[in-house]
Length: 350
Ligand code: ATP
Ligand code: MG
Image (cartoon, rainbow, N blue to C red):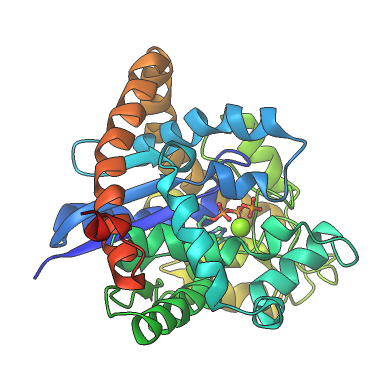
């Protein structure tokens, strides 16, 4: 039986190359070749507010931006149902019931939440909404009976939490939820693409991203400033590949045909890496090669974005229509949940 696919993004900024290789490529592949019943892509504005309560403008303004990024990067609005989380308020109701099935200590043990708390300086003052966002994420997935969740690897513990909540519900009340699974790209660098600073995963909140909407010169500047090997000072010095983000990006995006086109003195990435390691290959040359590849990927995305920006109203219209359909779907699941818990009082009416 065909399954439901759901993925999402927080509208805390435009989409970057980490999203492109970690999530969007999988989504586009599934969209075009997979078998599915519903293909849902959520713009998680209420989740974004859990650590941006006072930054409403940022969240609000990025909703349409993210929708444009998704479509520019290959999502087909006729196949993918892109929607805004806050427009399906049933998700909040579902979250409320799930909160009874998870403990605070379990939430605090979630490795992704731990890392994000540290990154945001929330150690002594975690907003309750932030600590519990994995529960609302479980609601997003389970309300729509989604079982295939294409994500980057930081989402693994969150999908695991969703499975636990579904199991807890199914055993406490009645088995109405299917267990979802995270689908993570097996090309490991794409499961967690590093940021241009080399320190963390590329993320909107860390400000270390190359964005799909960045213009040509911004992209080039970011690549030329990207972290490489600090001990590779002279061209003749041997260089390190591990931790070098330029090579991480080449692992993610470079194909053999790029060598023939932009750097014909090498046959493939292995040859380029070997030369870098033994010394005699400068960072600038490698960075200019990477820049050619990234610009080739981003040029058609920028073109499509410019077209969509001509008619922002149509993008909003699509989002609103999709939410209408999903509210109906969510209502059905809420009724099922009320029945499973036993709080469907209608049946007691005389
Ligand atoms: P924020 O910093 O606000 O959390 P983000 O850049 O981490 O933003 P999200 O909206 O949290 O982006 O993530 C959306 C999806 O993209 C998730 O499936 C996540 O795993 C994936 N993703 C985000 N960053 C990367 C990355 N650097 N590499 C691979 N996948 C990523
Ligand atoms: Mg994130």
